[in-house]
Length: 261
Image (tube, rainbow, N blue to C red; front, side, top):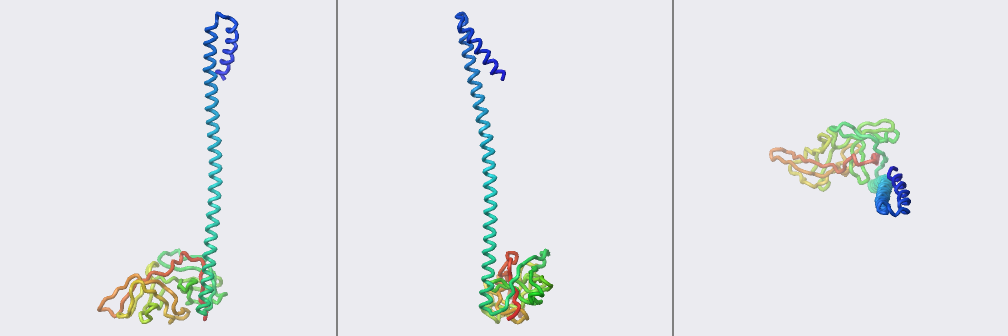
């Protein structure tokens, strides 16, 4: 503001000096000074305008980025929902196919909880006594893979004991060699140990382990897992094996209970 007042005063003086020849040099000096001040004011104004434009542009970009981020989140949610729906449809289709092939009676259930104890492995499903679920029945996925066995039943709820739970014990065999049978027990909630396998029974890494069908509520041929390693001692009449579970129950949302033939 002070520079502007000075510039106006300079213009007035330059007008006076213009009509008095004696002051020609002063007039030239004032005009040159006024020009310098004008350039300074103009450059300052341009600088302020450019800074303001940058501020406004930054604000606009920030709003656009926020809008794009919101759109990306929405799209990701839609993709996740679609993937979940596809997985559920595939699971239900698999259960229908398995029921058609096996002739077994199935009840579709949803997993609604898990045992927080890491040393134990159990799930809670939303099927119970009202669905004719009873203790000892097999719980499977759509491709006939064994998830576990019903341990406790209540109205609208049942507890499923997983094969990796230390309390679990199942009669199993090598799918290609039924004579290679034994007992599968959970260890520390992580793996499955198969024991009491006859010493000379054929079994090796990569073999598929399935249920024998000798237990009530547990049909023959349900997939338990794959042999990881075999331990054999010549002086021992039995050999043992470590079995990796065929599925990770944490990835499941829907299962089925085999309630009859």
